[in-house]
Image (cartoon, rainbow, N blue to C red):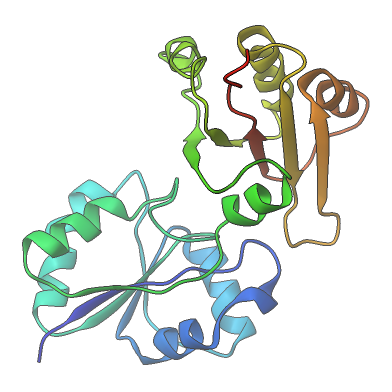
Length: 227
C-alpha cells in the first residue's frame, strides 16, 4: 500500500474555519507532523482527534527528511500542519513536499485558511494581480529587498510581527512615499480583528497611537504608472 503526504491548512484564529475535509484527513492519517505539537494538540483535542504527533519545524526539518520519506514510503499516511494557516506559506513544508515529489510519493494539498488572502481581498487594493513577499529579511538584505520593490506595480503582500510594524511602515514611507496606499490587518478571524486602511502616513499615525498586538498582514499599493 502506497503512503501519501497530506498538506492540511489549520485555522489562523477562529477554530470554526477548519474544513470538514481537513477534519476527515486528520482523523484518518497514521501520523501528524506539527510545527509546534502543543498548538496542534490543542486543536486536535478541541475536535476530539487522537493521533500520534511528531515535531517538524524550521530547526529540524532538514535532518528529518530521510526519516519522514522512509515512513511514508513504507505505506503510512502522514498529514503536515503548521501552527496556523497553510504549510509552506511562510511556514515549514516546502522541503518535505519537494522530497516527496522527488521520490514519487503522492502529495495532496487541501484548500483552507491562509492569512494573506482575506487581508488582500479586504484591503480594497487591486487583487487580480499581486506579489506575495511574506516576511522581509530582519537585517541582512532588508534594504536591498525594499529597493528592489520600488518599481513594483502589482499590489504587494507582507507578513510582519507586531513588534516590527512601525519600523516596516517607516521604511515603506522612506522607500515608497508617505502617500502610497496601504492596508494593515491584524488578529484576523479573532475577536479583536482590525483592518486599517489609508496612506502610509495615516496608517503609521494610527498604529503609533496604540498598542499593537497580533500577527500582521500588510497590503501595499503598487507603483502607479503615473508616478
